[in-house]
Image 1: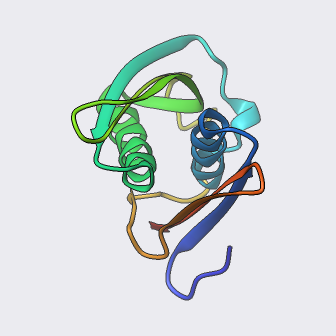
Image 2: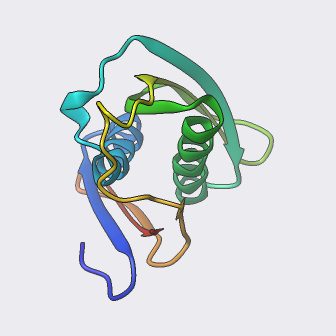
Length: 136
């Protein structure tokens, strides 16, 4: 998705879990050649937010944070669970990847954060549609 300052994504998926997984893949693909990353390790995490659009943004930002804190090159996100909890939603997922090595994982661009700019989520005709702009 074109944007004047940063980079945006547009994801259409057939289920809510796939929306999270495909959004993560789109973001990670901005950063790395995903084919170069092996799935030798995993990190499971949970995030809570007031609604689904905010949950998507928070999950994407947590992926960036985990990747940085653990020194990982993340290849993909597996959704374990999305459920209503405490006047919002809880997401539990697992990241798959390997330790970051700049000789094996050249960075295409640095994604700093998923933002609220251009944030859109809707379920329409059986499709879950998500749009988000990233600060690069």
